[in-house]
Amino acid sequence: MSLSEVDVERIAHLARMQIADSDAAPYAKSLSGILDFVARMNAIDTEGVEPMAHPLHAVQRLREDAITENDQRDLFQAHAPLVQDGLYLVPRVIE
Amino acid sequence: MSAVHRKSIAELRAGLRAGEFSSAELARAFLDRIARFDPELNAYITVTEEQALGAARAADQRIAAGTAGALEGVPLAHKDIFCTLGVKTSCASRMLANFIAPYDATVVQNLARAGAVMLGKTNMDEFAMGSSNETSWYGPVRNPWKLSAVPGGSSGGSAAAVAARLAPAATGTDTGGSIRQPAALCGVSGIKPTYGAVSRYGMIAFASSLDQAGPIAASAEDLAWLLAAMQGFDARDSTSLDRPVPDYPALLQSAGDLKGLRIGLPREYFGAGLDGAVGAAVHEAIKVWERLGAKLVDISLPNSDLAVPAYYVVAPAECSSNLARFDGVRFGYRCEQPRDLMDLYKRSRGEGFGAEVKRRIMIGTYVLSSGYYDAYYIKAQKLRRLISDDFARAFKEVDVIAGPTAPETAFSLGAKAQDPLTMYLSDIYTIAANLAGLPAMSIPCGFAGDLPVGVQLIGNYFDEARLLGVAHRYQQETDWHRRLPEAFA
Image (cartoon, rainbow over the protein chains, first blue to last red):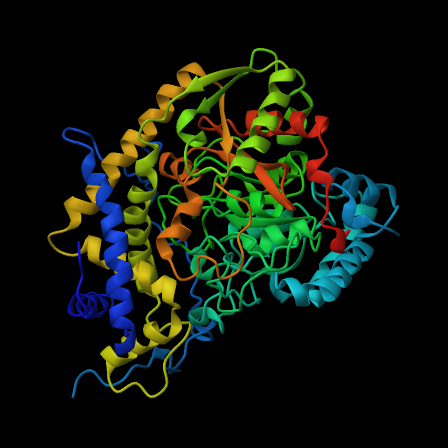
């Protein structure tokens, strides 16, 4: 598996993450190396093996559909980069 | 009051109750050691001095009133991955360098309820991604046994703090070895319990199907006290197990006889790649158990070599999903002057995350991207099943599995920083227990040259008490766990 710099830029875009132009080549190299290593998985035939998502085969617990949380908006927004009137501010999306 | 830093948790409990020293004096003694030694170790990101002294005075009052909890007045440190109300919780990332947690993690709450006094927050690899503590935004931690060497990771600050006795104990998390490998490299003890035993609520998520919290301390006996207080069902963690918490300290006392205990030695853990001197120290430890009556059984875990490849699909995939929440909008780092919303996301994440975190997010994004899911994530989950089945077969023949924790002793700072794959192989013996969800621990078993070696014990599900007992019997026969690096004695 060999990723190009263009692949790296595409993956970084999917991850919504800017990487410096000068980092694209080193990332292409290290990511390709990791994917080659990971490809060792293909040496094993796993036909018919059930994928394991949880070690103890537990299933999601359900609870009663009742309100359990208090309103802590002010507390949580105290940690936000930019808020106004109880709203999180981001650059204008709709003109 | 001399040498409180050399006392075990049981001795600290007894001393506090007997009035030999107060919790406030204990906290002061450890805070003084932190002030004296931490500038060269960098084990702490935040020291909560005022808070510690306040909590210690409150503990002293409860001891005097006869309402002391199990760990009343005992100081400890929390890995900076656990949310602590009103205290910076950075996960060693620039992304969270300004994050003051608005709530306590369940682990933090449970230990506080038991009376433990928080000294501060320990350094770690950024978002727990690393095996050397070199990916921290706050700089690397140094190994107390050799300042030019790494402490291991990702709980490197916790392990180094305990090794230098800048805290009697510390919390850690273990996704692929992050408690056991630094414990081994720093010459201390650490346990990763069964997946789901300890709540993950308020523990910043890396790979949710693997992450598990546990304690790091000098001895198995100390770990028993800590784990008993940390563990327990928590409705706020969807994978928390609803089971009673064993009385680990009491169960240790009945660990006495190992006669008939079957210890499995996986041949895959003693092959090429294991440093000779490390292997020799591990074999010496195994002989001690044999002398105590244990029976050694040669076993095979045939899919061992697939653990690291499968892990580097599962862990990055889950990390890329978990870290999607860091968007520069609701909390954490935001870039300056974003041009538009996309620019805000991209630069906040690009500037907020370090190189290794970005690498793993990209691997995860790639393996989960359209058309690749079955070839990578499902394939890795199938291998996870095979690895888990290997253990299930082994535990029909043996009671515990023993082997090395890490293939070598602490390596030099910078030695592997440029080569991710070499770094990933530091966890070659620890990752399988995470994939299978099994409890596993590391305890010190000697030295290779000047550096400590750890022996790993892996148990069947919920068999933490047995693991702690086997480790405790070893530590009754040996004194490796009492050794301190000279400069910090």
